[in-house]
Image (tube, rainbow, N blue to C red):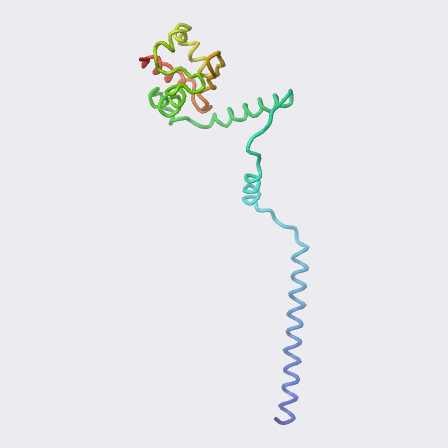
Length: 171
């Protein structure tokens, strides 16, 4: 190699070295500027995180607990207003088979089976009382009837139709 080639290589290496140093300086400056920018929260990630860490249930005790339980009950009822159970059907058989039969077929929780002997005292109270207990819920000596069979999305008309179907189909 002659002297001109050595000079060219030296200057070329200096130029490349300078460009590498400039690139590193620009990268560090960009990282510094990026770190100073406020982070934009992703609402989807926040919602997913909140859903993962939300408590599964709550403990209600005393007056504070009673108020919290009432608030939770009211929130569930409000949420159920927008829903229609079983596509709004008034077919008592459909509702019984999909909801009520879970307890009334096996007698779970003291629920009376569809047998005349189990319903004689209940039917003597009248249809309005039966429907009221089914809508509002009832705690008796034999067991507990949850309000609307445990499905707050059932309408009053659906509950009435199902109770009527159950009374009509006693064996």
